[in-house]
Amino acid sequence: MGPRELGLPMPVASPEPGQLPGEVTIWEVGARDGLQNEKEIVPLEVKLEFLRRLADAGLVVLEATSFVHPKWVPQLADAAELLDGLDQAPGARYPVLVPNARGLDRALEAKVRDIAIFAAASETFAQRNLNSGLDEQFGMFEPVVTRAVSEGIAVRGYLSMCFGDPWEGPVAIEQVVAAGKRLLDMGCHQLSLGDTIGVATPGHVESLLRAFVAAGVGVDRLAVHFHDTYGQALSNTLTALRHGVSTVDSSAGGLGGCPYAKSATGNLATEDLIWMLEGLGIQHGVDLGKLVETSVWMAEQLGRPSPSRVVKALGS
Amino acid sequence: MGPRELGLPMPVASPEPGQLPGEVTIWEVGARDGLQNEKEIVPLEVKLEFLRRLADAGLVVLEATSFVHPKWVPQLADAAELLDGLDQAPGARYPVLVPNARGLDRALEAKVRDIAIFAAASETFAQRNLNSGLDEQFGMFEPVVTRAVSEGIAVRGYLSMCFGDPWEGPVAIEQVVAAGKRLLDMGCHQLSLGDTIGVATPGHVESLLRAFVAAGVGVDRLAVHFHDTYGQALSNTLTALRHGVSTVDSSAGGLGGCPYAKSATGNLATEDLIWMLEGLGIQHGVDLGKLVETSVWMAEQLGRPSPSRVVKALGS
Image (tube, rainbow over all chains, first blue to last red; front, side, top):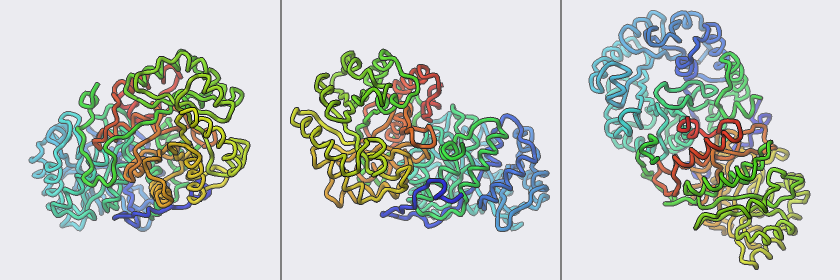
């Protein structure tokens, strides 16, 4: 299915492009960030089929799983088996989340070439999620990143709670920039700025991106990761694109959610993002029809409808 | 409930405001555009309570009902009774949709001071919705508008299918501007640009607004009316705000939908709009907590949950 068959109008690019990128890399997090939040553990063969279908739809960065301890995330306890059974698509990357040195060992054993670490921008979240302090976490991550980089592995740094924290409220921009710089300085090739509880709005996004640029971090090293808890994810993404960001995290069908937010609403849906990119004439490389079919199939596996507007509109 | 109790971060206004307005007028369409699409007819007393609660939440423009023939929209057949029973809040306006000369007679009898007419920007929609042609419709509206204006009534012109039409596909920008100008020239004080099937994307919104300005129409005479069928409504609204538009149509709880679109997803939810305005530091005058309570109450009346993300997050 092409855009015409889907009813999508021909692209009408922005007459005032600003720094709008010509191409966007979608960092598809559904298999990891989406499935780790499912109550029921998804069978290994379903995960593998999901990743196969996502790659077939044209996605080229597919975060596959996590080597976090199965005690904390039993949903992804099959990480090693999944990587072993994965038939990697040519040209695609399958990053894996690695929480610590032990996780890196397991990733190296599995011959993973792309990893991500998951840091916190707020003190309370560092304590609750990492059992560490805001400053202390970097001491934990640094040897992991150094060793990974020395093994030729690309490391992405996730920075969570960049806009607000459920316990502390708004998180100071200087604090976020300082934490993000530390992750880049220790060797992360990219920083993904996460609005983990969905409270960001466009002015806040602009302010944070400008503060990073003012601190010497180019937008080419930044990615954005928005949650749609309050319906703001796509507007925030548009704002980031206008500031030159060209890597966007999203989740097929909008899978996932944050256990700390009041609502179950999760990640920006990849389909809703693609609809906007298509309309803006921004290259993305994904076959929207195949992706919608994949999300409809996955919704059947999970036994509930996708929250994506595009999947709802086209998938019935 | 104020923003702090709701968990909304303090406003972080845009550091690059462009023409972002300092204040936005929300044109609340839930009682008319929302309820006219309900399968079950909502009882008169529920409609009156809904309008009372919306005004109590601080909304000052409340499109109340429609004088379209009950044969076509039986949901609003009680228009005259509703206006008779309405306890109008001081300072609030209650516009009523008027389809033709007979509708204007009824509006005048009911002592309505604000009306709206509903025109089409595409040939096929003019034929199907108005049983008229694209050009022919203006001949039908002109005497209605002229008479209303001579009676001191403010007339808003809705222009529907401004971005795409389910039969014709994309609608040419020149055609939309020409149709919109005719409505303004005949005496409408404001033009509401409707994306009736939700296919607009931000570049298209920019292009259309620029074309209106180039044709001599100030953004102060334009309002926008987006549907969230493909998840684009808030991003499109943000784009319109950045171009100086300061009147935005939305529907409490996201009530409503277009019978011609494939999905049931309807109007931009007023709550999701307010969350963004709040974050951008734009004045809107609405108590979000009261509005969410109203939408939760209305969802109970209708027997299904609100599609608004904010209502989902805060209303449970």
